[in-house]
Image (tube, rainbow, N blue to C red; front, side):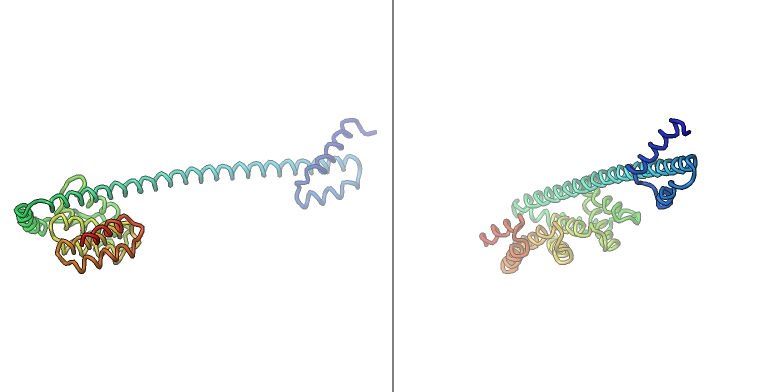
Length: 264
């Protein structure tokens, strides 16, 4: 006669087989053959099936744990990338603010008298000679590193002639860099501050022509119009300001161009 322990174990095994059908095809095949053989053989078979199901459950739990670890790792990577992107955006904002401050300074100098303008022209000529003799900083071969070094000559060292030399070399060396519009805009602003309006207009126009989708394109085109106006070429100035309004209608530069047109 079968012991109570054997009967209890048999009942539990049958219940597991009915409630949690997680076994593989082999386990299902074994269940179909439980009805044959002695009671001891059937109990042994059920024990083997139960163990297989327990092992499968353990494997599934381990897989779920591994997947959760992967998700946590990906979440951390996304957060890190988001932080780095925010740092890049903040850096660009600072650069644009510095550019605008240079522009404001140059406008203030233009408002001075004729004697100051003549002195500025003489200083520009002297700077031209020093610029030709100044050597660009050694390039590392990394576009971002060399670009930051050139910009540091402007923002930190105030060495504008060296910055022009460095940026001109950079523009030629890294034609595919995403910083090309910024570098050309910097050159346009630096030459404008030196009173070299033709060179300034060239670099501003390069931004518009080659990088029309850049955030600096509307400002660059507007400044081409300002240069034309300052050179007393009213017809070209009007044409450029109208182009700003047409090409970048929702920009601040379009609003400024509209004001300039009203005064022409």
